[in-house]
Structure formats: C-alpha cells, structure tokens
Image (cartoon, rainbow, N blue to C red):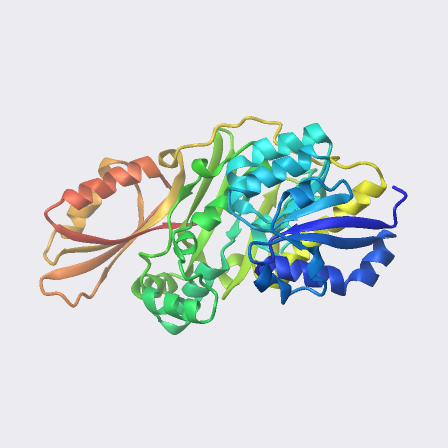
Length: 431
C-alpha cells in the first residue's frame, strides 16, 4: 500500500460515533507514528445535518446519503456505529462487496446475522472486526481469536451489562428495591429512557451469543440463548444471598460440554470469593476458562463514549496494519464446528428457592418430599420469619440438578395447598 493516508467513513455520530471521531483526531500523530500512515475520516453519514454540524470541524464531510460512501472508491474502511439491524446490515454487506473493510460495535446485528456478514467478508477477502460489540473498552474478541487460540475454551461467562450491574450494586450496597435503583440509574444516565433490553437481559443475551460463537468455534445465535432479566430480584433476595456468603449478579454464561453448548443469561447467586462478585457499579468483566491457560478475567468499562471508541479505533489500527501487509481477512469467521446448543431443561445448576408456606408442623417434610420425588437433593433449608399470620417463609438451596427435574419440583410446589407463593427462584453459579 503506497498511500500515506487511509480514508475512513463513519456511519453515525451518536455517543460512540462522536467518541470515535474525537479519538481519531486526538490520536492523529500517535496513529501516524505507529502505523506509518494517517487515518482520515472523509465522510460521516448522519440523519440530522443541523445537529451534526456542531460536532465536527469540517461540515463538508457530513452526508445523509449512503451512496456518497458506498460509491466512493477512495474510502478504505467503513466504521458502522448506527446500531440495530437495518439499515446497518444492508450498509455493511454493501461496503464489503464494494471492497471496503468494516469495523462495527453492532452486537444486535452480529448476534443475529453474524454468519452472513462474516461469510461475505471472507468472500471479499476483507476485514470485518467487532471488538467493541461485546464489552465496550474491554478487549475480549481479539484475545479469544488470537492470544487464547491455543486453548480449548470450556467456559466464558461474566457481567456484560453495566446498567443491570449498577442496579444490583445499589440494591446490594444500599438496600434499594429494584424500582428505586432503576430510577437512580436512569437519572444518572446509566439506563436508557426505555431500559427493557438491559433489565430483561436481552442486551447481555446478544453478547453471550457472540462470545460463545467465538470461544467455541461454533455458531450460536440470539435465538439459542435462554434469557431472563433482573426485574423480579428483591432487596430481600440480595440480603439472604449475603447471609449465605453470595452476591447476586446478572451473569451471561456459555459452557462447552461433551453433549453440546450451554448459553444463557440470568440473575445468579455467586460466591463472594469469586472474582466476579466484586465487580460493581457499571463495570463489566468476562471470565474465561481454558485447558492450557486456566482461569483468566478481563475487567473494565463495558460501555460509554470513550471506552467503546477505544475498542473501535483499536480495530481500525488492525485493519490498517492488514492493509499495509496486504493480508486483510486473515482472521475471519472462526466457526468451523457445528456443535448442538442444549435446551435449558438439559442444563444443570443449583437453585435458590424462596417460598411462603403454611406455618404448621410437617410442612417442611412435605416440601422435601417433592424434591425427593424428582431426585433433586437439597443442600440447605432455612425457615425465616414472616410478617403474614399463619405463614412461614422457607428458603431452599439445592445441590446440582437438571433444570428439567427442578422445574417439575417447582410445578409440584406451585400446586401444593401448603405453598401459598413462590416468591423467588434464582440459579446458583457452580464452578
């Protein structure tokens, strides 16, 4: 590559797009020294020109027309930061087919259409990089594809949504109820106006699909991931978890076992001594277990203008180096296996169950009979005080049991005349 300038186009000038624009401008001299050439943003695709003009030094680079980018042969790299499925999918496929490399932070798109896009990039022999799609500024995709490639990774799991981690931290440290912690997260800007994707676990589910695909070299899509959010977690659940030496975190878990891949997102009790238990506020962390390296953890800011921009611009560095060496597309799709993804009923976990039952002799024995019927061993059972008359609160912790068997127990308890209410059911993380 004889040119001293690499031209890039930016799609979107929102929070992350603005961060990328600023980082590339602020790092111009450093990038030139490190890469031996200059990266220049020559076009920015926006929806609102009037609003975008205030964010850039040269308004002439702004456009509302995708064809101004797709049809410009001088543009080498397209940085897609508009998010969502469409028109992002159309733009990315078009860019790759036009011979442009693509960098994105679009977890929604990759979790659903990753196979199509990576195959298109492979056919075009172009780079499609997405480090920022999973954990913001935390490097995890490149380590899995490169640094840890010598391992058979058996588990990748962690806290991959800052909004829910902030909420659970406030509930744990300050005794807040969920609604109050959510209101605070919204006030401080950690939660969107519509927080559904975060609090219902959907955002984390997309990231688990991507992590599992990369870690296990087998395609996992969003539809394969079992997803539960944190809306039913109460301050009482967290208090009881603390009494048992645990914290409650929204965990994304992917395991590769002999009978297939497990992939799910749900709130879980995790022992206080586990490294993830001390990851608080809006921080994220990803825990990786490999047969050669053992246990490793990647920790940092999982979102935000500059942390995410850091990962995006890091991918731009990688593309430029590949262009200079004429080896774009050298690390493409790594899903060379076709592993089955297990149904949630076939997974195994421990379970925390909080029940409201009749306050009379013999009730605990009746409850234990339901567990024995389905061979679900109980590790611990505790009776707590209840404010309601003639009612006792019972907390049960199981040993490792299949989800299918446990939910049969749960159904029996729901239909039992002695059980007035199942207040909580939370999985317990088992190493």
